[in-house]
Image (cartoon, rainbow, N blue to C red; front, top):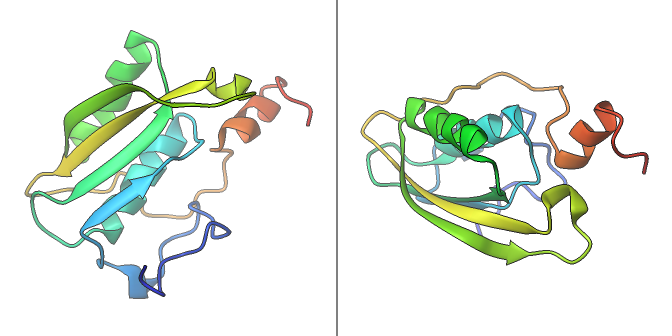
Length: 140
């Protein structure tokens, strides 16, 4: 592991440190994020990856209905990420009602011009529990 790699305590909402840009050939994240959080994570991943086509990322998140998946996939494509594989039922979680107990894994590959959709700091709720709390669905 690169010593400059952020620890889990770092917040994805903050811009990446210059020492991390661009450094990595592969990114892997199982974010418990919703909506704009997925776009934010994909943007940070693009920023962290070395330039060029063919860099890989693995992003796992809760299953979505077909309309939501169309939106998520469309956002990734707009950022220059090609979805090369979808693995349904990738993880199963005991007691993870917010994630419906299961997630899927998307393998994405950069095209020749990956473009982050988000480069500034994000202070909006992006994690699943934060979004649920903001919507009044979770109290603890």
